[in-house]
Length: 303
Image (cartoon, rainbow, N blue to C red; front, side, top):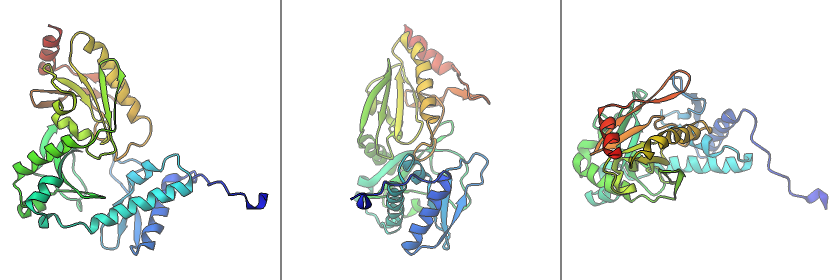
């Protein structure tokens, strides 16, 4: 009977990133698309910043597939990679944004936080984007059943809603995105997690997440699926700031994060104004910069 025992799944090879990229290339070819493997050459890129580039020039990013397959067997990882590629290919067949009706846009538009900075020359531009905080922009997306498409500058003049309407309905829909887990990792610190790509983007309307916080809220958005918040309540807030920093760094240093790092910084929100209030030195140490707004908020909270 031993001859017929089921063979255990093999682990992924030691050079996991290259294996995932090669597997994705093979699976994409099986779906009729020939592509080459391209590693991001930008100075701040990570080893996981890999994409497949088809002969047509279309890019198929693999960062998320690499993150999701961490710790899986080779068989399990292959299934995740296949699903990732199928979702990307489905996105190509989605209704063009300019053909969506006003009502479809009202239902499907979402606001989304995006790390700022200059993209590749062949990537869409977001000059319309609204500044959210230092290093973070608030852009717009359209959510399809199995994929999400960014609204780029080139789309705006062809859409059935104005930019202000898109932002208004987009934020309302992002506020309504499900939260899968809500917990308190340290006294006074609140965190939410969600499979939704827009979980961290709920930071654009914090009252919808945590209710009233008259003195403001310190928060972090390590990646798109997580939002960590510290409402200013009183003297105990000062002791909790170090916990907020520590929890955020633990998340970021725990390995590749889905979608890449959104922001490693601490941000402060009060009266619909958001600013970055932390800095990271060359050793990775985090320090809080108490500007006038934060100082006033702390004084108000302490009373």
